[in-house]
Image (cartoon, rainbow, N blue to C red; front, top):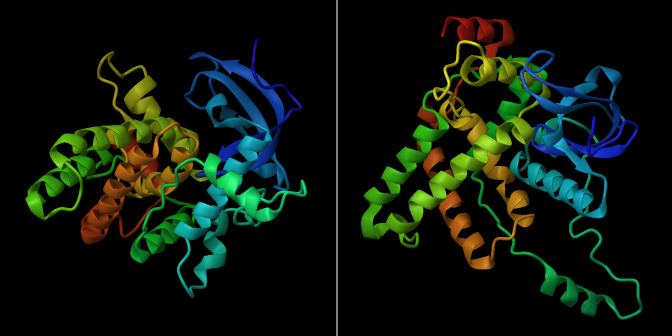
Length: 316
C-alpha cells in the first residue's frame, strides 16, 4: 500500500473549516467493500494534538496536509479569518466563535513570521515581504452573517443538531438567483462586465463548493450525515450511472456561507493575479449582500436533531 503519509507522522488536518495539528495512528486504503465512511481511497486514523481521544477519527487523504512552514502559515491564516468572520463586535459569542468555535488553541499573531533578524532592519524586511506577498482578498462580511455563522456553529457543535438536507434553495439555485439579480440591476451595478463575468464567477464558486465541502467545510458531527447523503445521491447501489448529484445541488446557504468566508485563504494559496482576485472579491462581496437581503428565505431558522434528520433522508 503506497501512501504519501506514514503512520506516526506529524501532520496538519482539516477539521471543519480549520486546520489542526495531528498525528497519524493508522492508515488504510478503502474500496466499496470495506469503506467505513462511504468514501474510497487512502484514509488515515488521526489523533488531534491536545484533543481527547474521543475526537480521533478516520479522514480521507484530501483532508491532510504535510507539516511544513507553508501549511503552518495556512493554518494561522484560516484561524485568523474564522475569528474575524465568526465574531461579533462586543458579543459574548466572540470567544466561542474564535478558531471556528471548536477549540481553544486558535490564537494567531497578525503578520507573524514577517520580521527579519538579519541585521538589515525591519523596514527593509517589510518591503521585501510586501513585494513577494500574494494578492489578498479582503471580504466585507456583514454583521448579520457573522451572527449566522456563530449560530450555525453553536447549533451543530453545542446542541448536536444538523442542517436539514437536502436544502431548498440549494447552492446551485442561490447562485442562479444571484446571477439573475445582478443582471437585473443593469447599469446601476458597479460590478465590472456582469454579463461576461458572472457565468465564470458562479460556475467557479459552484465547482469550489463541490470540491471543498467534504474536505474542509464540515464539522465533525456532520460527517455521518454527509456519508449518508453521498450514499443516497452518489455512491449507493440505487444511484444510476449518470444520475449522481453534486453536493451543490443538495446543500444550501449555511454551507455556502462557510465556503465564502474561507475563500481568502484559498485564494492566498492559489496562482490568481491581483486583477482576478479583485474581480472575485467584488462579486463575492455583492453575493454576501444579496444573501443578507434575502436571509429569511435562504437560511434555516431552526436546525433538526440528528435522529430526525436521518428519518427525513430515508424518506426522501
